[in-house]
Image 1 (cartoon, rainbow, N blue to C red):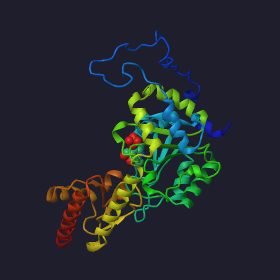
Image 2: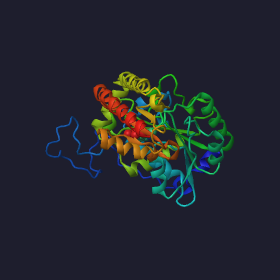
Image 3: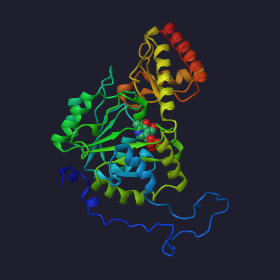
Image 4: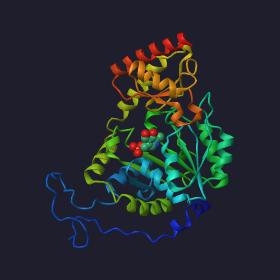
Length: 369
Ligand SMILES: Cc1ncc(COP(=O)(O)O)c(C=O)c1O
């Protein structure tokens, strides 16, 4: 057995699994504590009065086929947020263990760790290039249970190169580390996104978390998954049961259909690529303001330091002057100070108008400086 197993909480490994009642709808269901009749207004095909299949077979099958792995290596959950929470809980003992994050990055890693009472070791990205500080990540990784990697990264849009991923993977193998690879924007950087799973030997020490939220535009359906070694997926399954007890049938059915047919994937990826390009061309360095990172994902990171060193001050002033709401880089960590994150989630016409307003605001600020 891999010594990576030693990183999981011993009490979790020893836990008596929680067994769910058999869900097979053909049974005479006299064993389950569920309603035999539909609630008023429940016009769904199968009825939502019964508990769903805890791990919906059809959906797990679709997810497993994405990676060409057995079903036992995939766990369905409610978005990748749930996966992050479950992983931190499974690996970190409160007050004793910690995780590595690389801000500016997705804020939920830190929140999940804090809720669990776990430590958070922050290894900021390079302030100028948003590149990983590889030696520092590797050093911090030795003191942690989990290293979170996010590529394409939110908010920077950085897509880590094969060399970077291979270096981290080699280190993980040398030092028995767990990588949690957050790949929710994987389709938004087609051709350049590299998963640690692609490095030989990494399947046993990588947990990929993913969802249909960004790739298929199904954010509100709350469907995600975890792909990892079978022994760990089995343990996480017990956790998942306790946390959520499955997805509503119509939700897993819709997600299976979407995965089967790749609904929307290409179009969504192309739209965001075009929008990133629109912003890159619009902010070409005039008045010193420029888009940085933003090679994948659904965001544009605007470096506004030439006109304001404080992204938060800039964002609030922009809101007051032009009615454009953006996220200050500071809310993702110090390495993104003096930036604003623009979500490219409005129609092209709205984005074009926002560009005009931001440019007008930047010009006014440059004049005033
Ligand atoms: C990098 C990253 N990971 C995970 C999530 C959570 O997504 P979901 O729970 O919808 O799968 C988000 C949401 O914005 C994100 O940006």
